[in-house]
Amino acid sequence: MTASTWDDDTLDRFRKVGDPLADDVVRDIFDSGQVDAVRQLLRHLVRNDHPLVVSPDRTLPPELLAHVERYFAASDAALPSLDGAQIDAGERMFELHGPEVLMVLGCYSLPASYTARKGVQVLAQTGRLESDPKRRLIETTQMVVDVMSEGGLSLGADARTHGEGVRAAQKVRLMHAAVRRMILHHHGEAWLAQWDVPINQEDLAGTLMTFTQVVLDGLDRLGAELTPPQRSAYLYAWSAVARIVGVDDALIPADLAAARVLTDRIKARQSARSEAGDVMAAALLTMMRDELRLGWLRGLPPTLMRFFLRQDARYLAIPRRDWTAVLVAAIHGMTRVLDRVVGSNRVSRSLYRNFTRRLLSELLTVEVGPTRPNFDIPDHLARRWQLPARS
Image (cartoon, rainbow, N blue to C red):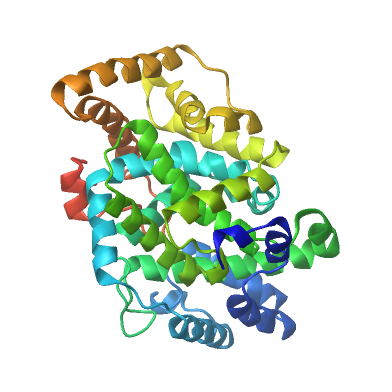
């Protein structure tokens, strides 16, 4: 399918489609009378790193584990063949620009996803971000690190031995199916009439774009120097993740030009103000301002969100600019001059990297619970980005 065929009729049809591979497994669990088993599965996926790699005392019941193993076998059979050179190039890009990527993730990609009036309803329904925004940010950041770190997208002999990024994507796919089933169980036709299928194909494609095109746009706004091959490699890596997560091939852009078209099409169709979006954005902002110990720069997170979102900030209840808006404007005005003098973007890069280093350092100190691994960054990236060792 080409970009020219992403018309309203086509995208409307994709809003009625979930993910048959994973949905079939969860439906079988549900139809066998195990409504509570779906809840148990979802809790298990949330609380554990991987359902097939846990200690014996946390193993799923045999009848439920059999369904999960069937899902992973089907997922493994559908894994795409990957271009190792492209994956390696994407990993090198992340090693160079990872801190900036992760800052864009928190201050642009996540808020941009909350402007999707229909898609954000799932997050509001689950309530996990509102009740624990730090955990949500940690999980999202961890997935990006897992995917883009060296070996993250390597394919092993089975689901237990794939790279961390592949394993994370397979788990997310199963979580999506469980969430779909529970939402439709509780809300049924009323939900479908108002919001369409939960976590449908258009919403999945929109999420892919927030991790790719939106990230690349954010890096441009920071002045990052990316070559066309680096951009293409980054898109390639996340397109591989999209296939693992269950996005239909017809909604995966073939190149950067198509990614721009799809991003703009979905944004034009879905962006609107909503109470759910406001709640999600407020929770994220509160966490950043209160937990990151920014001191006199507490106003910087909403300022950065407005800086990245630009006109799209009108779709979220982001506080008005304070004096930090003047600071950001001054930084960009000053660095444009200084960067011309020194011949690179080193000045602006160092200023934003300091903010991101603070964000990542705080996340590294968070204890997420006795059954979940804490946020972690591979040692070689921590050294490269000059992050402190976990205490």
